[in-house]
Image 1 (cartoon, rainbow, N blue to C red):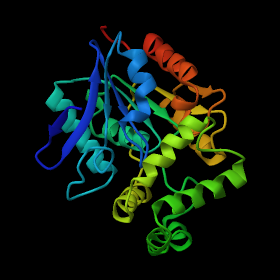
Image 2 (image 1 turned 90 degrees about the vertical axis):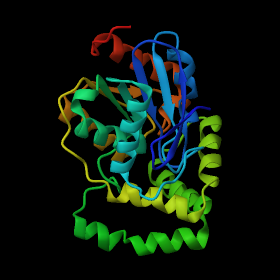
Image 3 (image 1 turned 180 degrees about the horizontal axis):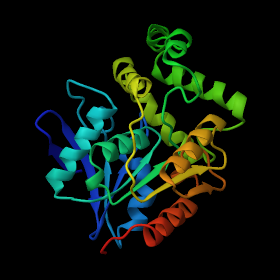
Image 4 (image 1 turned 60 degrees about the horizontal axis):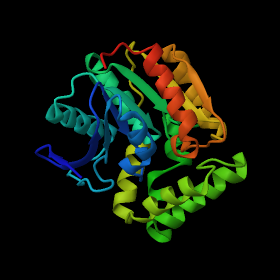
Length: 271
């Protein structure tokens, strides 16, 4: 797998095909392999790039961490690969990075696709004071270090699914992929990602061609964030059937169809 040295961290990525660039950003504790069905599908017409964000997959950790840092890494990768105006597709945490990158570099985004993503973590309405009182950092830090990342993630997953009925994935393949990826994290790495999500502050988004996508089994709070993002961006919202949070892996055909329709109808690119 090719790498790019930003001068501060080594970023691993996958690149296939030629044409207008499509850049895919994965969710927290996952890696670029999340997008394997999209890499295989779109590489005939586009240059598809999937990224292992710093601290994930084969990429290095670096000295700093945060959604803004991940957006800076994306800028460095695009510069290194000579990609001027990609369509950026982000799922979950990747959607936060995509939002930050678009806000920081509106002239460098040909299109923005936000999948199964939010504008704050936890994704429920609360003030900053309520957040720090109800979900204090020391509390979840202690829980992760006591239980271990995999058990902590499973606890959160079971809690959400007890309320929502389903959330992470509809298919065993997608669920197993996610749990295996999370299980590869130590406490320090897991917490730096969780802290980045917790500390994210939604930026003002530019007027760019955009679409919002989520599965029909997505958790209610995430759906409400997706609705708000679609309204804010004046963007179409597509609900992928038979899919949950990892909609692109649960139902690749429907997800790819929604993305292809967006690219065909709303993004002006030369392919």
